[in-house]
Structure formats: C-alpha cells, structure tokens
Image (cartoon, rainbow, N blue to C red; front, side, top):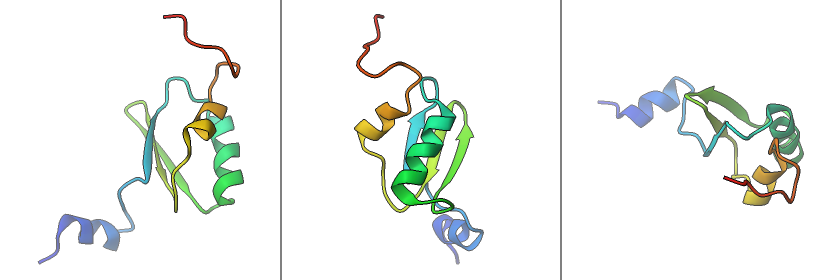
Length: 79
C-alpha cells in the first residue's frame, strides 16, 4: 500500500519548499531572485489561491522575499 506522499513522489509531485502570499510579490522580480539563488530550471513555481508555491532545494530568506515586493524598498505599509 502506498502512502499519499509516496504517490505524490511517484507522480512527480512533492510538497512545496515554501509558500508566499502573492498579493505584494512581483512575479518578474521573484523569477530573478529564484534564478540568482537556485539557477535556471532548478526550481518550480505554481500559483494557486493567491499563493506562490515554490519547489526548490532551499528556502528564500525574508530579505530575498522583500526584494520581490511591488513596493519600493524601505517603505512600510501605511495601513
């Protein structure tokens, strides 16, 4: 009998390494940061329900996530 995680691995699926809310993330900037950190084609990103699911060999730091923001660096939300 296979567990669901064994089935997922057998079908090429795995749990995301990291999930990030997509509302304030610029996808182009995210791609640049992921390419710089992991190399091209060394990660996968899926977007569902306003969340980016990142499949990679590591996690992005908060600083790297902040670099992907639509907001200019150094500005805080006013709300």
